[in-house]
Image 1 (cartoon, one colour):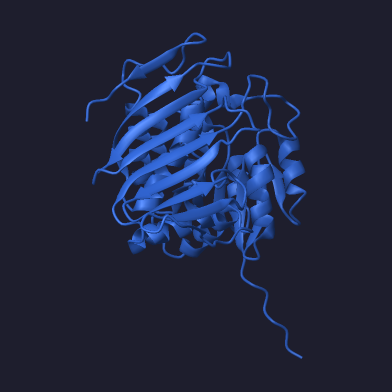
Image 2 (image 1 turned 90 degrees about the vertical axis):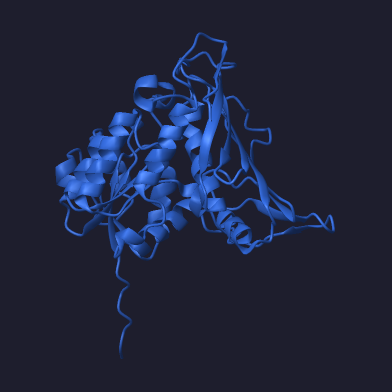
Length: 359
């Protein structure tokens, strides 16, 4: 009697045992038949141990070099606070591991540039963890755009909001440390945390990126140093208009996650697809008939699971990765430039700041 060989698995190191790694990336890796977690590293050794216990044979450590030297390790998932991304990603790349780094690449542009240079110099596959580009609904939308079904695309509109009061802490957290509203560690508020997803997604949907933009930031509801809302208005090179509204001040019971891609022949509307979970709805509205129809997609596959699959598929040929870090760094520069040099990242509560960047 012959037995089927066990599938080859890719060894992952989780660097940073916080909420997103624990509640979203870890389940995706656990469910993947081609993945296994070999180590978890966090400066909080207890947190690393708690997460590593979910994966048979995984090691827990508070030492980066030790973690990245784990036998079988091939990919490092970097999920530390933004200000620590550069150090962790550079260490992983130097150890020869592929790097999947959470967005934004860093809290400060110089650190982001150094991170990109370190990964490029090491010659490893390196990617920003823009999970939204892999959401099955968004992939279906991109396919429809590429097929010409929408005609000439004239606009993309994104609303991606959440409720993040000053005392918020991630589910399961015992520290109550809301680093996402700490200017030093996060680099900004709702704008820096959420707008990168929208900028990346526009490029993934249309096959061309936003090239010029201006941004309004808002200090309206929550009394903390960073913005609690923002609206970016921009355009792609071909002239598609883009609006991206992000917020930390939209209560959970309100509609707060919507994507529209408007064309001359049809319009796509995605609801509840922006975010970390599977599902949502994608509709196609035909401009000729006025009829709306649901677009099928895999509603069980989470964007994190799809992202894991994509990274592993490109490990053998890093140059084939469709979203190079240099492109992601360019979008991060655009994100910062859209604020204008005269606009502070923090402002007294409650004020509204705006500055237009000439195209």
